[in-house]
Length: 135
Image 1 (cartoon, rainbow, N blue to C red):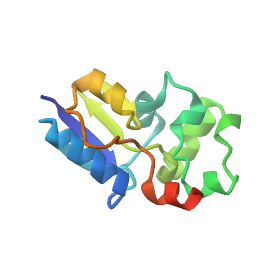
Image 2 (cartoon, rainbow, N blue to C red):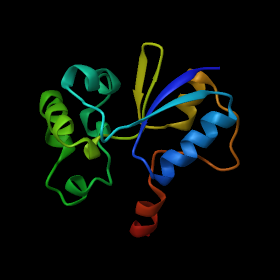
Image 3 (tube, rainbow, N blue to C red):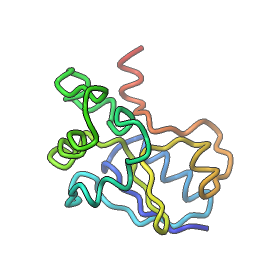
């Protein structure tokens, strides 16, 4: 099984579910706060690059929800600069196993990457509180 460096927002319900699934699947976790980590473009970029800039963002971040930050209109450099300044904008979790880094929690992708046991219900990076607010 893998040692997963797991950057989370402490107290996040979705992150709690993700961690539980990873542990049930036999993985060890090194937990870190995405909010207090000292980020710069060199340390954050490898988690995000290679995917569309708009997918780098936490859709429930207040500045995104209000429309102040428009992820689809930003370049990679602009997006990274905003996230270094305001880490709540970063899609969670950030995970690292060895030299491989990923952002977000797509259950099928994580399973293909490091292996997961089937959960009783789907585990995503969507915040249950935000989902309830939009219904």
